[in-house]
Length: 384
Figure 1 (tube, helix red, strand yellow):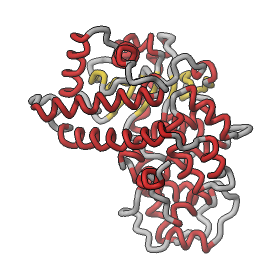
Figure 2: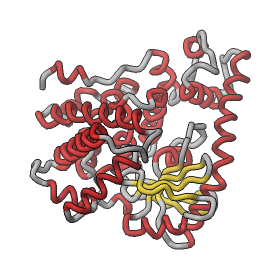
Figure 3: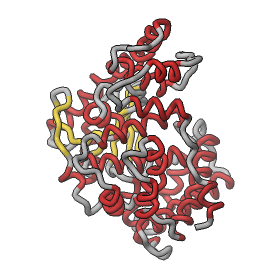
Figure 4: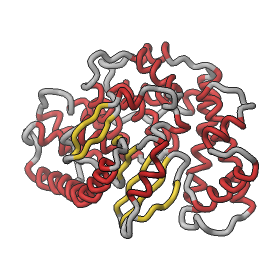
């Protein structure tokens, strides 16, 4: 592979301070020198909040040993603010899960929820919304049950999930776990574990699938340069998930990622993860199992275009989603659609002449008229 192409997409490295913090979170001992490095010139209120919350987690684990007295109360204050926000929203969310439980609709916790209450318990995290998944066949029934006079359904805000909103509280209900229905035909629900969640019954993905899902969903954030302040979170989360895996194997991760059509996105993020935990993951092994074929090179180039387009589109039209349909907006939307289709073909290892299959399986349309209607609604009312 052309090195110029590869390095133009290389991920920004973590700072030494960030690497130290993440590694110390899984060490049994800390030193005064370590804490001095982590807290040197630290402004708790201006620093990246993910960094502060992880620093708080480290402090609580070691009873604030070696931490400067003047910083402890400030770090605890920040931690308590995010804890309070989570508690205030949680009762509303649990009520929604109870409704689905009574209807015997399986519910799977996704992203931050699954991590906070199963894989990374004890860590206070920033959560702006709640993500769950229900079987695709149960989606409409679930939405009808979740809607009430206070909870508004905002429609299908992406091609894989809809949104229920109540004031500042937001619940994203996914009918697909992976983009483009990558889990179709797999046993991801069968492998999931049922857990008790504040008196309700929910599922979480098995550790292997959770790791792949985390890498797959975060790859877009990294590619698009979004949520940069949260990148420490996903590395910490992935490391927590590894503790639940009895026999971690990159080869098995590679094989399972292929079942979800997530090989490229997983390959994209694993090198950055290995930089923080080189003792767990050998970069050479990653490069051997995830080689650089021409298709991966093409995937990188198309993804760069895709993420630039959607970020530009959302930034320009997020305050005018229902506004006028200008020619520029119309044709920019078409470009995004074409790129989405090309990425789907690459990830599914299909030829570019598979558009009818894409329309039927992903867009859920069977003719040109329905495709046109869906396109017009999407570019006017939905963020990409």
